[in-house]
Amino acid sequence: TSHHSLTFFTNQGRAYKLKAYEIPESGRTSRGTAIINLLQLQPEEQITAVIPVDTKHINDSDYMFMATKKGIVKKTQLKEYANIRKTGLQAINLRDDDELIEVKLTDNTKDILLVTKLGQCIRFHESDVRKTGRSSMGVIGMNLLDEDEVVGMQICTQGDYLLVVSENGMGKRTPMAEFTVQLRGGKGVKCYKITEKTGNLIGSKAVNEDNEIMMITTEGIIIRTPCSGISVMGRITSGVKLMDVDGEI
Image: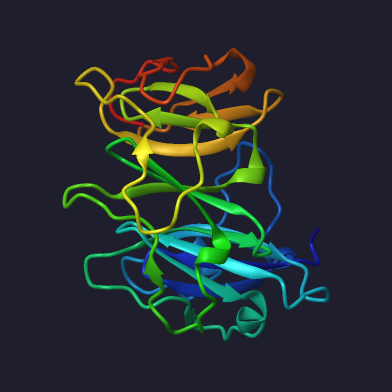
């Protein structure tokens, strides 16, 4: 609702806060307001996650779960982000070559899935990750090859299928049950067969049969597709064409 607080996380690991009603309302075709006019972002910062929080009902069992490009994960109690000043605060300490890519609100009872651009996926219990303070770096969630990086993090309860999409517009759904739980820090299992035709993975989402997804290319072209029309396939397959892409998604 408009009374929720929105916590914005950036690729540089900083958190900013804004009341939902402070964001101007506008129509579908309007341009909207530049985020730089609402938040005091630093140069080169980009928003990578937005978490709506009902500040009146924060429990000790509420956590922010974060994942970085280099496979580092971190779990911190939500109440540590209750008071964020206008200039923002450091939510996670990152190495120079790392970026924060995704943040989820959890309750310490879920399974986390990390998906990489070279088609690997790991599933582990979030209880494997000990809670740490706001300024810590976190722990290794997934062991990556040098040229690989994490492109998505999802929670097992967000959907019955894991949908993955590649940069050339290919994709598929795979049942969540095909990804067995293992300990954090492993290499994971193959979740996508990458070829020259498909290109690397660029995103993943946990979906249900009745969901719809929107895919947007870097050129600003958008397509809306029902998930029920996307083929369900095993882990080691390349999927089907979801979108014609001239540039990249």
